[in-house]
Image (cartoon, rainbow, N blue to C red; front, side, top):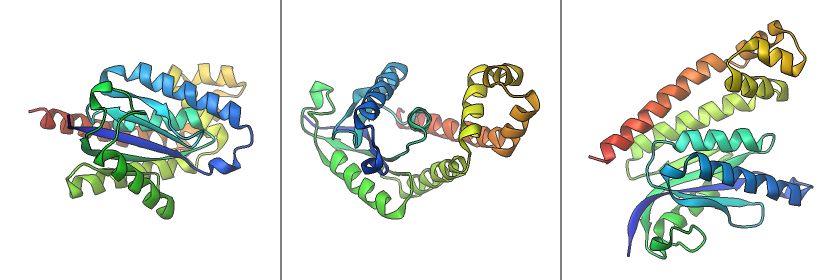
Length: 215
């Protein structure tokens, strides 16, 4: 049996520099569990850790939540980071098991090759779905957003994450022990509103692509 599906492979950046490897692996296991729970309806096979603390892999049934999943993983993984390959191609081994660790096929091999190229380019994301123009446009947009966020300080990361949870500057200020003005200033400097708008548009495009593919 062979089936075309979306494979997402993630590779932890500079994993050799991680000192507390057991604690990090536990963290990565929690992240996979969270993604598998939050996006269960969009997954064909759950995300699993493949090589110690280096790689994770999952199979998606559609493209619509791609960026949301990447964002969720990166936010939970911070201050560490990960590069991602996203591929639509055939899976021809153990596809009926819905078990990522048992599956194999062109989609997985292509994802592995893409991760190697990303390591050379220092970029975070690349996709291959058979439409070169769309692949380059979406990959470019995701890389641009991630690179913008890379310039955030640890404090900005914390404030933005808390604000996304509460949507209330006063609650964030109270929880972090800072002023509301400091929260507002951090949000403006991080360009959170502008980036959020771009992310919303990107998610809308991915959702539209999913609907078009389903026709």
